[in-house]
Image (tube, rainbow, N blue to C red; front, side):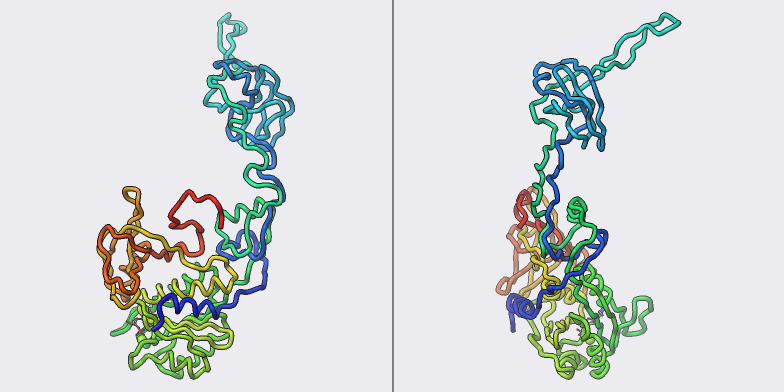
Length: 433
Ligand code: AMP
Ligand code: MG
């Protein structure tokens, strides 16, 4: 029986990255794989600008504070200054507005107060306070303080997004800033989903005796969409060889065909034989893992076929380990693996010694450490147990038990391909891979 790593390597060897490009609107590019490098068409910021609402000043004028300066101009974001700041003067400035000539720092408004002028109010002979054109600087600033300088984020011509990157909402902002309205992306892999099993009814129906609702079909469709691929067909078939065969043939026009159910050793498990009958080449059947041991991978023409055992958590794990990386490769993603990291076991986890086991866990940060917390889980037929978790603890073959306090590997099945730093050991790591 293959190990998870061996099986993964075989799947990867069969997946061919797309070299095609299509264009999508900026609003529709999230989760897609970028097809070409994008460079900034300017320095960013493009001009020296204020990081604060306040007053643009010459820092040397504020060396001794409090000090009163004469306010000669006001600049809003989108505006440009008209007057240069000279000795003893200041310009009222808003966040994002260009720094006026002569100024080398900004005093935040919280560190100032208006200087009021007392004035005889006409008629009554009373005395009142009215705003003046002066400001009192209460706290001095250093040169360069509260200014974001031209080019300090990004230089003109710098690569701001790379081919192969899976686009996230933050990248949509980056592309917008670079002036990209139509984004060059790889085509979405096209996926057919076939749920097999005589017991299945659609979610809208009430199951009769012995029947269950089909949850794998909708779950797989959701996972395919999350992975940035597209569902082109979703069907069901009963446990009859000819019915399954026909449904498989229909699904083979897609890049990937996902089947659930019918790959085990039961009397009504006909998927493997049906795949043989349509001329598919089986690459592997069974992997040393739990859940999902009977998983099957085949290739038929250019279609990659995954036969996932019917239990919902087996489907979920099989997808995360084998299907998602295949979809990532097909769409020429540079990052293929689901993020893995380490956590401290917050309780006991057990698995069969001979198999690589995946046990759902919650993830919490406590006392400065990421902790994997056991959740109530009854095995692969218990998606509710899995849904109580955030990730899976990985118990490699040879490890039957981890105890509270042990370091364990965790597999994130929710953050795959999305956030490059999800679960990375060092959250302050600053450089994009
Ligand atoms: P099988 O792999 O066909 O032996 O199925 C294993 C278990 O998963 C059985 O309890 C099935 O009823 C269940 N199962 C199979 N297909 C589905 C499905 N589409 N949705 C929910 N459960 C399923
Ligand atoms: Mg079955």
